[in-house]
Image (cartoon, rainbow, N blue to C red; front, side):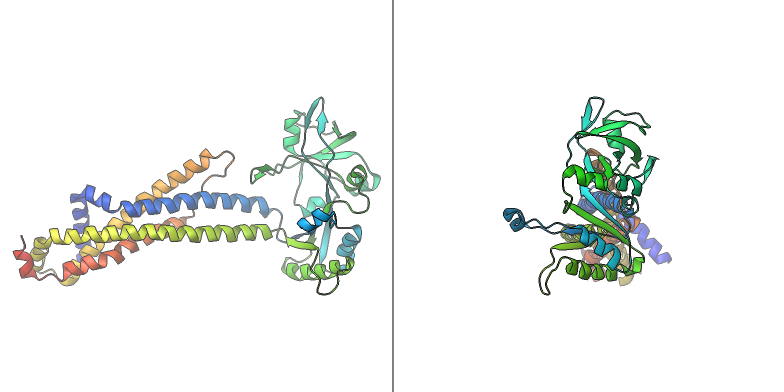
Length: 406
């Protein structure tokens, strides 16, 4: 331990004696590490934000939707779900718990006291509150009696309330949606933005009312969200639902589905795959940068060995072993690389926070501790790997020839 401590002290003294050269030597490692930390911090902050926004949907939630391609739209043969599909899903698929059909109703502007906005208008049943994981911060949500009675009631998002400059408690106020008056019975909890789109710029009206106002009694444009009883049976319930809906839609064996059933977290899984791929590509680019930085360290260390040939000869004459010389030069290379990595981590964090702050409505940058530790450890490893050749050369010098070197 004493020998290792002395080698460490000698390595620090050598680097301190040539501060400018040491800094320039480690610049490649510094830039590479800074780049990876900056990009990872921005990417991780964005990923965390997406996960938070999708986490309340629950992994036991699925969505049934009709599938259309360009040929469908070109020929006008649009696939739509019908109410037989909903009944089949609700009554014939074991394991299904809550079923919530949702209509996107294009009814026009929403007006209050001469002010108007154009939010997303959804027709929904009371099950949507559970299935979509939404809640009301004021008032109540839509009820079964609202739907059965065709009541003109509405639950609004906080952005709609604020943009219309309604009272903080707008319960009991009346809104004009298209040409119909609706009474506000609830305000939804704030959900924030996702990909720059507000989840609070929406209003929800009873499903039956949306059907009547859009004139689509038989086959409205809708999707169906549903939950399962047992989270561990999501895959099995999805398979059963697929078979039942195929039968309900009279799809012949071997024919492709004209619908799709997706888990609520399927997008999140796809997003995680994309970010993992991006991180892998980034790691490759940074690996090349660190490789270049490692070659720079090796070259400077080789020059340092030549400059310090006489010093090495003196050390060997005084009893330093080959192992002592090897350890000292390896420590110097590792410290050079580690120093660049640590500075790069700090600068990368600052750059990442600056980028996140400069983009409007972008989530704050975040870097996991393990990423910083891995970056620092990999930087030191690069120094050791590329320091082996110079250290080996120094340790192999003949002491007599080294003492004669001018």
